[in-house]
Each structure stands twice: as structure tokens, then as C-alpha cells.
Image 1: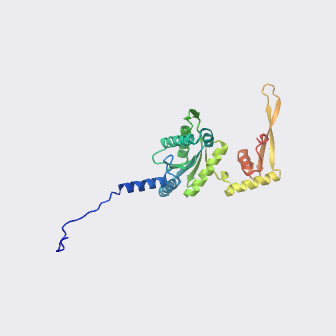
Image 2: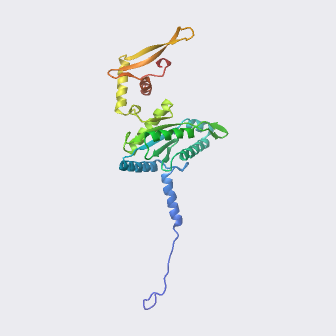
Image 3: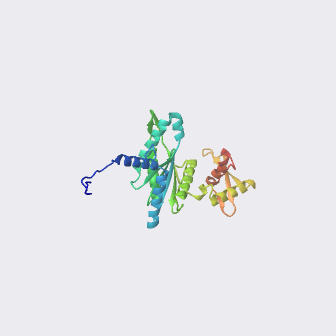
Length: 271
């Protein structure tokens, strides 16, 4: 500016902020993704699930939430080391993402537990997807020159049938996953009897406790016949619970329940 107050020149100061923006993007990505697999973490999965539920409510649609746990992952870690365990998690990630649709979300919740959000998917579609995933995961993988047979257990919760919030669906899918793991089923859809905290489950526990205390469990003896001689060679003792007003409760329901609650211990004579 000269003596008369006229502008005679301009000084500009510029600063390159691209590095700062890149750093901020890295921090944002780290906050929402798993460091090992690069998958969305629990926080981002929760957001994706919430968005899927909002869309489903608007379109009167359904959503499936899958929770998956690798079987024998601890065994791999303990016998082959954590590097092999990490490699197994990375290969699991590759197989999951290769099998799913682009609209699906697969996330790592922690350890060897994953969650999968299937937007606009009914029970039949969820069943089909789980079976495809199990086939993909069961292909052997070579870790440190050892061929490992990979397997997993899936639990499935459906919106709105099994819950209307991300928290409820995640808890119910987790319950179903542990039911699948206990029963060596591969996968299981959520059912109230799987849930130790559900009213129906608690009522069943109370009824079973009463039946045991009052000797309401019955033994049915099935003869084992030698087809060559026609003679009965031995008998098989089977436990049966006749619940008042409801008929017989299947052993597949009450025996695992009794074992979970400590009412009985596993013994061959119960089967």
C-alpha cells in the first residue's frame, strides 16, 4: 500500500493440508475397521445394521443377522502359534467376502467371531447363504505346511421376528450361534428355548427341576433284537419327560437344558 492508501501488491500464504486430510482419513478408517482383516468392526457393523433396519421398516422387508464363530480356533493358535491364527482369520475373511453379495456386510466382532448383515433377506435366503458359507469355509487351508480343516458355527436372528433393534438381534444371533455350537449343527436360527434368559426357557427349567424332584422322568426300555435269531439280546433305556398337559418333551430339548443348568451330568444311560 502506498502513501495514498492504494493497494500496490498482495501477499498470499498457502498451506498444503492434503497430508493432514490423509491422516484424518486414516484415523477415521482405523476407528471403524479391524486392524488385521480390514473388515468393519463392531461399531461400523452396528451402523450398517441400523441402516438396514431403517430400510426394512420403510419397505416392510426382513433382515437377517448372522453371528459366526470358528470352531477349534484356539487349538490352531495354541498348536501352530498366533501367526497361523492370524492367517486363518485372514483366509476366513477372504472366503466370507468372496461368497457374499456386495450389499451384505461382514464384520469382525473380535477374536474369531464375525457378524454378517444380510439386508432384504428372508429366512430362506439366510438359510441358503449360511449353507454356501459353510461349504466355502470347510475347504481345507494349509498353515505352516499343515492342512487344517476349517469349520464354523452360525447363529441367525431375523428382523422383525427375533427383534427390532441391533442390540436385541445381535444378542439373539449370539444365542443361536452357541446353540449351533453345542449341538454340532453348523447353524441354528434363534428360538426362545435356546435363550437361558427368556421367560419360556426359565419356565422350562423350572418344570424340569420339578419333574426331577418329583420323579416325573420316565424310562422307556426298547428291546434290541438279533434279526438272525429273533431273540432279544439287550434293551436300550431312554429317558422321557411327560409334562403335565403338554405330552412328552423331546429328549433333544430337555437333556441339553438339564446339562446346561447342572441338573444332570452326561451319562450314556440317559440316551
